[in-house]
Image (tube, rainbow, N blue to C red; front, side, top):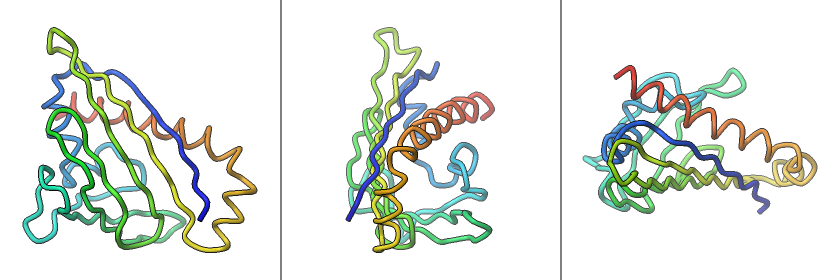
Length: 155
């Protein structure tokens, strides 16, 4: 498999738990995550605090809607949250790290994403376009973190 790894970061003027609670709720992903246009949901009473919990989203890409199931791989409320694709196209791992300011009024957030090829075709495309895709992916991640802040401000 071939991977494209990128990261983004920013500061959100909210306490870490406020950011974390909003960010890990699949029902709010459509408010800040590109190509997710309706609320997602936890599967089988899953919760963001329990590693192994799963949630589903509908991801719209290329005029097609794809169901994707994510599994929580790490969770420390107010500090980190990690997920991995377990069903559906576009296999990714995403890890969010949050650090609250000393006064508790803002949170530095970083997001590392590892997009994995899922076929020989995508592996070849990743090799050919990876040099160009990585900066695009970094811009997209930074934009999603800005959109997260705007969604938090609107909620």
